[in-house]
Image (cartoon, rainbow, N blue to C red):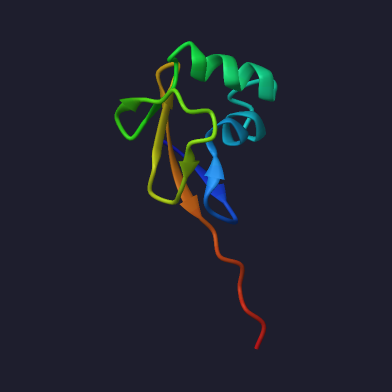
Length: 76
């Protein structure tokens, strides 16, 4: 399982697919979702703007990705 780090949540599903290179473009990401190729937390996801948060899992083409929120260090 691969980890995808996000710096804010929630983030829309199609944006994660695009920015992480799972899809070549936003249009392709939306088409993959329309074609029921994306599984979020064990269920086929058909909502392009599904809000993804830390702890969610995304499956696509036999690969699984876990979403983790990264918190930038605070200055002292």
